[in-house]
Image (cartoon, rainbow, N blue to C red; front, side, top):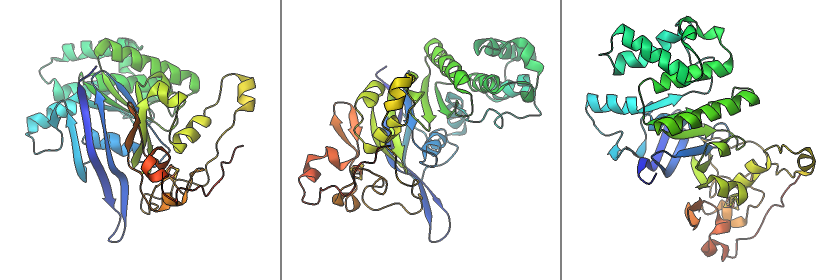
Length: 338
Ligand code: SF4
């Protein structure tokens, strides 16, 4: 698991709203995902994490920066055949298993769609056999093939979405909040299924989530995103044990604890207000308007995304000794605990 499958270099995706306003959904991010690895990408709604998944998988063209997949740039002027191959290699699983499946198509038709494009040489019988095998693989069976999406539960529909993604034998899957719409008990089943498929098929995942509760169980490393930027990236265990960014600390403090005694004494860091608009990003550190540890310097200087410890990257002045030596590195808020 040492070779990179995906490399993102200073990626930006901006949307022009009108002549005066630009929505900076992704505002300069860099990271890589190794072959066979799962990178968790976590942040509140509207932070740009889904746009990251859609830009990597070519649904959106980036404004600037580079996506390199399997050693080759994705958004270069490539031939039709190369583009088709990359689309096959990179698949998405979507958040809402209710709206992401066409209600007028049978499960057989839904899963066959990718095969018709990418494996057009298959006969009808071969295609049906493959769909039945995929259904078995995701914990369904061939009797389900002739049914329609509305006949299934949320968890079963997500299994159909996974089978559809696997049909074209991808190398890389962007799972965009695949468990957010499911009951907690079903969430664990889907996470376990994704882990099992990863081991069996050597898949690489970008697993997008809006909180840190389930991500730990599937991710090797986790990137925390806030308002278009990655603010922290490290090994999964390290993030849970030793978060460095105040935003990661707040997200971790919000995870409910299974032990009722511990849960009663849990101190949750409550962040003020909502995420600011990506059309009007605060100066300096973009988290400063909600940060319980904000300092005077934070409004003037944007923190660099730096390696604070081996393999542990963070964008916060508190972990930059040069900035902390400045006179204006003085706190302006007290931490609020509830
Ligand atoms: Fe908070 Fe300042 Fe660090 Fe930003 S740079 S996270 S505002 S302490």
